[in-house]
Length: 551
Ligand code: NA7
Image 1 (cartoon, rainbow, N blue to C red):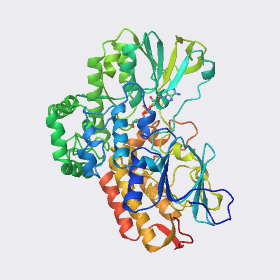
Image 2 (tube, helix red, strand yellow):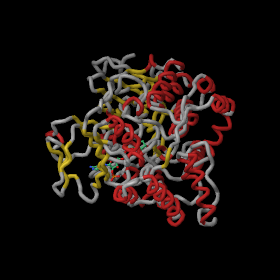
Image 3 (spheres, helix red, strand yellow):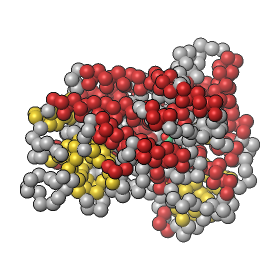
Image 4 (cartoon, protein in one colour):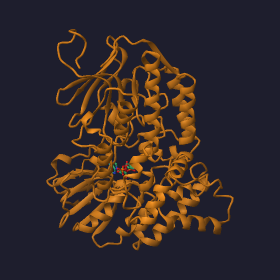
């Protein structure tokens, strides 16, 4: 295929659709467009393999917080029946194997270019094409541009003074070296106590000479209680796939268990304690679902928060350390609630120290370690940044996207992301953002959100092609309405009360503070998306017949 009959001198592959990213979202989107609609679709992937998040995040202890039988594609019976998870929560290498299995089974690799990091994507209204350039200078073009870049893929490496002077090594958990890191005999400093730091600390402490955890914000965490899956469970999950899918589709977070319809305040203390205790013993994210008002009523939330603090105090032997770990400044689950394997127990080890960098902030990194404002020095051989991501918008903004009339995505989103349904952006025709800001995405079990988006996008493209439409994009008014709705829905929960969360963009200096994911739950969101499509793509504008036909 070549571009634009003589008008452009350079031969450029032209596809119906270009998809950026080969994680869960990109793989399914390729399959849907190529094998269901028969389009010429191609994936550009920065890494040298499939896997997305799970290709990059290879830090010790990396494991999904969704249960494995729910962390899978449900659109294909063949995929469901041909794969077996080994543990209750899938570990990073196993998820990577799963996604390679998906790529092989669906024969996807032939339409993926690896080592292709998109550095610019520009809409050309003259030929109704997206023109895409990758870091190696290769050029591509397509009618449809679909970003499948993940919500947590742009590493947030804090700009702490002196980082480059450090004589030892430093690594970010999201760019973990593929050969691994040998901590034996090393003094390790780990900055960050989000889901990642909480997973990594126990494993690092197991092999390091010493681990110093630099905690800025204390965090709740619930024991995962990971365990190998029995053959009876594996058989049950396969035989009941339809019911599991239905359960996931019925709940706000897309996990296969219901949220209770009871208030935490309508039961007496003993009953509430027993309910929390049962969820604690069961382990994992179920504790958030024990009562319907944990995320909406501060008094209800306090009961869960206090229950967890009490468990932390039971585990951690040193009272000063326990006080630091329980001095949590936000309601439970208003930041992404981590689950762990032995996190709080780790602080009972002789080779682990907790440092409160809220009370005594990091002043600089020196050649030999980390110095705090008080002057206290922590000598280190290696620093692990478990400092998270420029979430939800970072990966999109660094792609250099320019829409109609030279409008850049950075300018369009200067005050925070503005989308219609988290799926499209006004001024960016024919561009779709899988699990984009304004959609439930990170507040759900991701494969559920991804399947819904991929299917909606695929249906939309099919409908546009059937109508002979050249372009579709949302109106400014529709985006304004949706952004206002996303805000209203978030404000009806306690989530915006965690003032420093990445849901709000508050973890990245200078980033606009806007609550980015849609907090109204998957069933409500799915309904809105379906209604918009049924109403002929209400809130979107289309332009005339195609001016050109791609091969
Ligand atoms: P998170 O949840 O963003 O956690 C990052 C942690 O790093 C958090 O404790 C931050 O403290 C801390 N942090 C970030 N910058 C600094 C600086 N400059 N100094 C000290 N501490 C800092 O990222 P994760 O990788 O753990 O998890 C991301 C998601 O991946 C997770 O939710 C799952 O969905 C999977 P803060 O809280 O901002 O004070």
